Image (cartoon, rainbow, N blue to C red):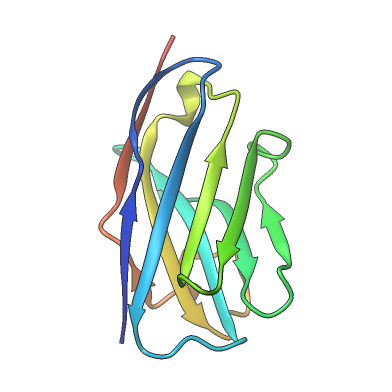
Length: 125
């Protein structure tokens, strides 16, 4: 089992920045590991935001956040980060960290077994 704990959410004005963190613990992480961020607003399905490969640092972003968000990882700390710049009110959501081994489709939520509890990000206009 892998446990994921997110932190770093909060309230920010439009145009501002936030950095989210997700720390993984439990099962030994290897190069098959993929960690991602999804977000969800009430009444909507969970939306893919960004993903990163533990092996080669490959990254993948949703079109809606490209150029504004950056995903990165610290292998020594088993932690993934989401740096969010130029935030917009439409970025307001609960952001969830997701992870699993050998994920076939990084942008699909059903591909992930492990999920964090979520952290609220609110962007005011």
